[in-house]
Length: 165
Length: 203
Image 1 (cartoon, rainbow over the protein chains, first blue to last red):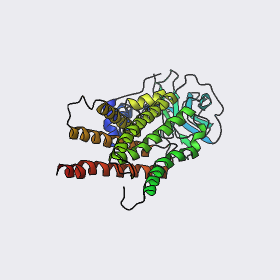
Image 2: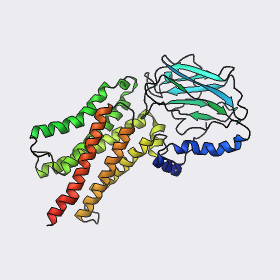
Image 3: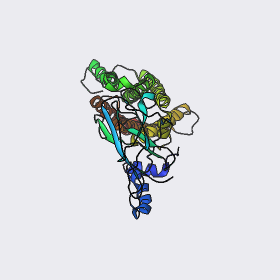
Image 4: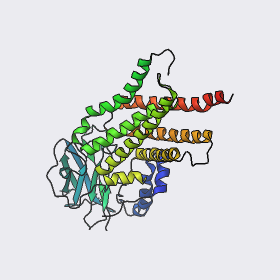
């Protein structure tokens, strides 16, 4: 499990400017190296690993009504990755992010896509968001924390582009 | 407060503006999936916000029917209530999710509103120090009051932005009404006490 990228001064500057600039800035720098080769890897998001449970079991579903989905591809050539374990957790109508029944893992299909139905995600710590993780060693660990545009949305997508570890 | 407004109406307006947003939390659909300690943290945060409405009114003794001494006494008591509410708010959030709370306190949280909350918290800590050390600090009365007002302004501004940016259990319209009311009474009290009243006293 990697420590997320933390930088207080740049965060303060970014917060002052509206808070969102920082999330894209480091990605832009790293992206430059990958630009010649193709698809650049997804960066871990700040706070993405909060309340993570290593080895959350594989599940068929975590409830009904909310669809979490996305694709997992390889950095560079963008090839879809099959059988990659993605862990998903969020605060839902069942309870908070530490509620065990809000945690589960799914495997990607042949086209690199994954999908998990779960209970409705509810605002947690001030805004509705989900957590997703790739943490299996073959590729670099990535923790995502996508925010939902609206608390009434019933689906959310998050894509991974993984770089070799 | 407002000239010509009956005493009961003034008290009712303040009480309703402060307590309705706290009461409406209990109608939130989000409560269902939340642990009691998380709910307590939210209610404590809203209570702290409600206290910010009465503090400037007590500081300027604008509420009808209170003696100057009683207003001062209640201003101090409500200051203690504010501190207790903030402690429960942050403590409850910590028990709910230690990493999210530590991120917020260390200013590395991905949520911009937490920065404003932490700013208000430190201004409140500084206010407590200023009050506790009043006799020990080499400050003249006016200097102390100006410092107290500056810190109060930071607490109020930080808290308002923090509260308004949050999507949580507070009902949106009553939250906005309370925040606008807090901004108005705080601005009025600081201008009135520091400019109008102190100038009149010097004459």
